[in-house]
Each structure stands twice: as C-alpha cells, then as structure tokens.
Amino acid sequence: MQIASRLRGLRDSLDLSVDDVAAQCGVEAATLSEYESGSRDIPVSFLHRLASAYGVELTALLFGEEPRMSTYYVTRDGRGVKAERSKAYSYQDLASGFSHRVVAPFIVTVEPNNGQGDIHLNTHDGQEFNYVLEGEMEIKVGQKLTTLRKGDSIMFDARLPHGMRTVGDSPVKFLAIIS
Image 1: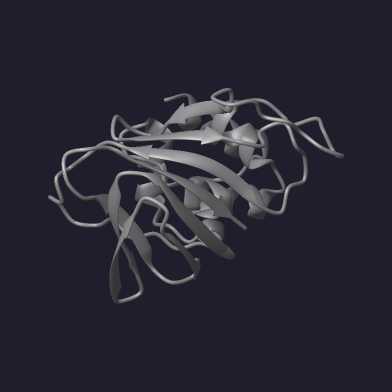
Image 2: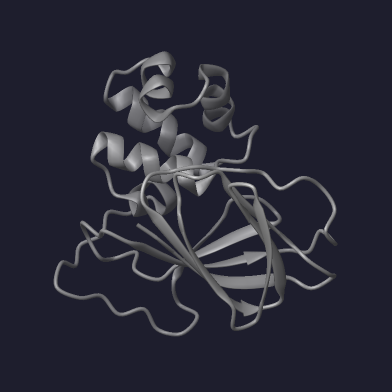
C-alpha cells in the first residue's frame, strides 16, 4: 500500500493524469489505477520503467527514501532495505543508498506455490541477471522455460516477456540484478 501511495503521490506532484502515466509506461489506465489503489500487485519492472520515465530513483518508489551516496554504498549481511510486493514476493535492495545507479541489485524471496498457477510475464528495458541462492524455480524467457537450482544463473534481454515461479514446497531465494 505504501508503494501504491507513492505512485499516486508522484503522479499528483507531476500534475499528470492516469492516462498520461499509463501511456508513458506502457500499461492500461485501468491497470495503473489498480496499482495506485493497491488492489493489484505492482511488478518491479513497471516501477523500473516509471522511475526511468520520470527521472526518479527506483529506491524512492520502493522504500520512500532518496539515496544519498554517489561514490560507494555498503550493505551489511541481512540489512538491505526490504519491501514486500505481496505475501509471496519480498525484495531486499542491496544498494538502496546509492544514487543514480545503472543497475538495481536485489535479493528476491518467493514463497512456494508448488508449481501451480501461471507464470506472470513482465517486460522492461535493459537486461536482467538472476542467480539462485536457495531453492528451485522455473523461469520463462520468451517461449523458453528453464529450471534453475541453487548455483544456477541466467542472463537475459528483459525486453522479452519473462517471469518465474517456485518449484517444490520450499521458497526460492535469488539475486536479481536489473539494468
């Protein structure tokens, strides 16, 4: 709900309509309205696109704080700023205090769904790298479905439709680096 509130606040402060922002970010106006109301899960890919389009830091949208460091930023073990997109997804930002970043590194934890349900696909500019730290996941990039286990990684063009789901009854934890 906090992220939804920040989305509304940004749009209001820029004096833009729902239609204006939706068109700029490549989503339907109804979808943006659902994001802003908190009734629909907000994909990080959308937040990344919005941040790029309007010149704001992704960290500010996710966590409500502007990054201040420009030479380096240290994140101690387990101390990255956390956000839950939903009950199933949580993100830990590993560089939340670094301003004007060209990549966004996250530890993503996804609760098990036992391989049930569709894989929700997203797209965004840039590239994405995922490295599995724990558990097992299926990831779809374009038309290709691949299973990744602990120690496996994948790098892909994030403009291709992509998404993932857990395999088995354990959570999956992976490092995601988005450019």
